[in-house]
Image (cartoon, rainbow, N blue to C red; front, top):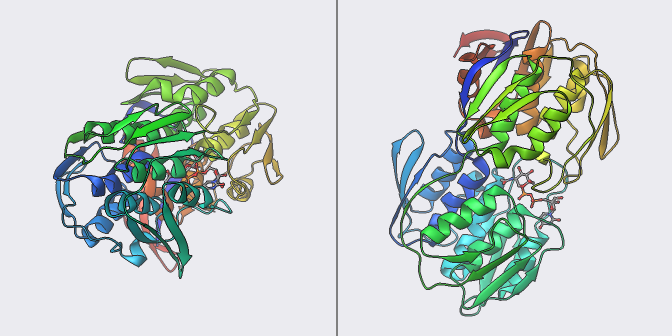
Length: 428
Ligand code: UD1
């Protein structure tokens, strides 16, 4: 078993460069199923979810060449419909984008139901509603989503009852080669949606309005290969911004789009943290006691749910009481019992955590219960007194590129170890 071991107390100084965005890399990689010819995708984060997505595409018959750590060349001309390998696809949430992409290209799909982080119920009713509105019959059968259209999919108007990143992206993928115009009302406005639309438009699609709550997709007859660079990961950036402030250091977080970070920046500033925005970087430092804040997570441009656990850690360090309300997922607070093991004083209800700040965090053994919870444990370990051992770090490696190396380079005392029967045998 691999663990991350952190000796807390070092303020972070220097520059951390942010990698490409996980949550747009996955849809962009699967969107290549819709494209004739070869795409070169640049600025992919070197994370396990990207490796898995590429392995799934290869398993479906795609020709993939790794140009370097962050760039791949992909041709999906020989991909077969319904060929996503079951065991690989069911472990990854983003694999449900194969459904929209296959429907768009073949008019039918068969994909294992998705896995991913456990935040409670993760329904796909809106994806199904979107596919049905475009003219497909959809069945959930033996752990698979299966859908088929009579003839070509036909553009239509779809109202999303809930703002859903996944459903918005899946409908875009299905509609981009459909006949006529599709309008998605109450669409997700996240930068990942914009990134996917930019990629598809570069390939010849006709998508307008991505980044607003009404997206209009005029079907085109084919898409051609392009070279495209994925946008920077706003959640990775936000995680390092909080790490800088929490440790009382000073970090330049580079390769970011500061606009994407506004909700995080606003909350950090409210706490008394300094955030200086430059064209493609932010500089973050804290030089005074942190003030308590109240936070509510919401769809973009609100405060991101994927920053909930990291924000909770810095709220624990503020002098006073704050409230953290979860506005997206039913079960996002499973990490709190791990923070309490480190000495945090938090009372939790299903949708709100009451954080009583100012109690010192102490290093101990904790679990990464999901991806962003794992990042929160890392931040907690960086500020805690003594040594923190984090297990189940495969969650962290699904989504954070070279996290240990990046933090080491700015002064953290952090390493990854391989542990056998409770004993550490190798440092890696
Ligand atoms: C994506 C992200 C995830 C992030 C989330 C919200 C990926 C791989 N994952 O997840 O990290 O936390 O966006 O920013 O990109 N819902 C329905 N019916 C549906 C679909 C969703 O009711 O058919 C609800 C969900 O229960 C949830 C809300 O909509 O309450 C948002 O979910 P959604 O935006 O779809 O999340 P994902 O795309 O799965």
